[in-house]
Image (cartoon, rainbow, N blue to C red; front, side):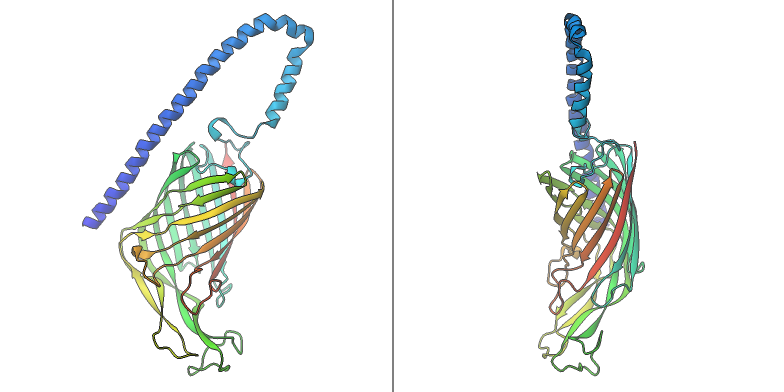
Length: 378
């Protein structure tokens, strides 16, 4: 009883903190732009009085016509932004780093992706399809949701939530309700190097007596337990240069509301294993109702405006248990091409664990996705 109550209080506190900050930010924003409006009115009066004094000179010199032309040229030279960095579809940046963290009011973005397992022993044996979207409810607050799946729907997630600015275009808060489950990989013992493709030991022996016996995911997956959680992130971006930025904390932690018996596989060394025999054993473990730690950090670059390259890593620690074998470090590289303001096409390549247990390589377990996202609205 206490655990659900503490989670509810934590979520309520986070929400109230955001609402309070959001109101403070809006008041400051309104005051700033209210001041701008007053100054615009004052400058307008000055322009009117100035026009009365210099109208004849403008007629004699043809200054009015040239002034219009100069204004047009100046407009063309200006960057495609509006006051406060709030974009419309016509001015939405092609360069990804220049885009706001929260999408502008009235603009929606839909992302569709298809992916496949590319692991050493399971390449192209399983697939997944994702459909996700965001909508700008206001200029610094957006709604988000989606359906993701992988490994022939053995792994899936259905989520819905919001992201809002704490400091506009610098750091946000992200909360999403998430119903999800993980795929449980089936491990098998393989000979390395194999005498034949995919060779497995027979009677505990490989054809090549010098081959090692590596315990690896076989390419087959089972379904884990289904969990409900509230995912918390503090998306942060700091542009070192116009072409380079640090991105972090898209995910931070998950507040779980139930436990499951099957959630991930722990791989541990076998004490006293002889050379040429499996050196590790695998155990399917559950995930309790304690929060999980999922921080992420990466770097984004735009070598040219239409081309974006992002590399980021995530630390996944179930139940905040940092003991050996209980966490993973997936690393994702994304390359994205944006031919215009409305369309992005790209690839995501993920190494599922770059800190694997003994006997596995960081590049053994891989996943590849092809995605396309489109924006539409005002």
